[in-house]
Length: 123
Image 1: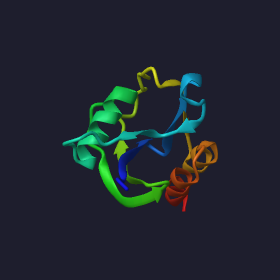
Image 2: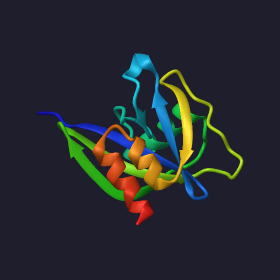
Image 3: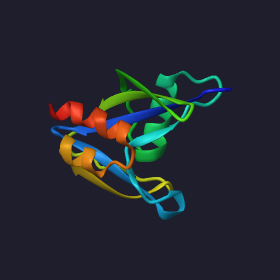
């Protein structure tokens, strides 16, 4: 069985974390910037690309050293610090966003794995 590789990027601005709401065409739930690793990409390359595509932020997320697996998918987590006044420019995948504490962002997350990583920032 071929394992799928994905990245999950937590965007932090000061003490707040970005929560993105996926548009109704994309199942309408709260999540972080995320996406698949394309052929020939590293996890880091995919994190840069997905961050720019989904939020408009051109930056290099740093690996958190946190990886999880679910349903045959391996997800590597990244963190990026956004500039103080920066606001995301959402792509077609998202229709809303919120800046939240780590705990509040974790409470919004649809999937338990990203929520657990966010709760680690609140500890």
